[in-house]
Image (cartoon, rainbow, N blue to C red; front, side, top):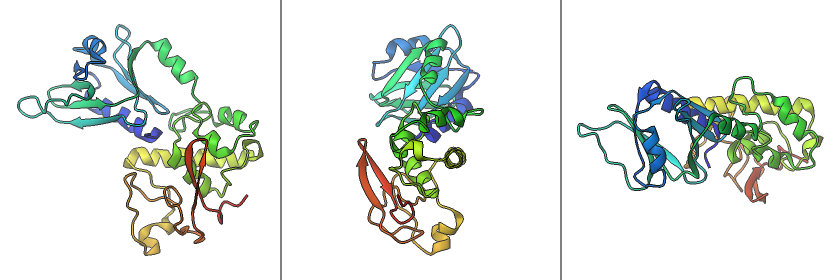
Length: 273
């Protein structure tokens, strides 16, 4: 599932291509046909991201398109050819287009028109998003500091922190030497603030680069004389999807286990209980 940096980057891409312009809208798949008909010819006024939720705003008379990509959703941007193509494939839930750009949304878990109060209700259910200006880490800390739940599980709970996924949770805990099974209430306030600040910086870099890079300069392939990582998630990481490989810092084999239905990766040498 895409993490928060991907959704914020998508919001920026929609703004760059369509904001302030009237769009053509259609739903080749057909399940969003009524919604597309309402959007057709309307102006995209803004695009917003909250955690893993994308919102495309078309004004008070139309509302917002609420998109959650889920496990399989993707957005493809392109430039029409001289004939206005390429034609969207049948699996496209929503195509927005102008004479110079198009965006195809495929396979989202959710694509629905919502009102401003409904958008606000979605945001209210979420924890603070490290990528949003003014997000309050103390609001998340209030839940973390009272919980017996492992910090690795809390970081994936979107009601605690919005936008963090499996890669960022594994990497930020490694970077701060925190045992992923440590109960939230045993974390110190100083540790939590360091984790939050690091998430904000790492995720902002993810928006900028379009991939997740978490290794410090001294642990890059160039600095260590090692081959670069080859993985469909891209970027250089410490522990994510590196089970049984040596840690870049202490050389201990990285471990993997299932926690709350998700794969957890950590280094037993650097993240001691």
